[in-house]
Image (cartoon, rainbow, N blue to C red):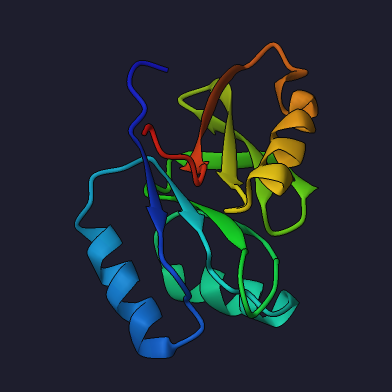
Length: 148
């Protein structure tokens, strides 16, 4: 696989066309293979389709949360990155994506954790299914944790 460049961004809402366009334009100048997106505020399958079509980079996959919060996605920055499989552990909060790059496979786990400590602990406690694989696994996102 060599090198894989992964970035993460909390977009704090992508429902507005101009905001989405600005975020996508910013991302096109970033040199990444995979971008984990949090807090997209997707409403439904129509939003998933629209957000994917407008991305225009490589492949994209989304997990719908609610219009008022959550919603995560994974964007491929290069057409050479292929999405093999996806599943949501918690809709709109944890998205697992298996990808292939240059014939090798890995797993990306995008997490948008709750701000409230108890809900966050419960979310983290349910992540074991993400790691039931022999693939190299990358974990990232917005964990809503501070170091202080």
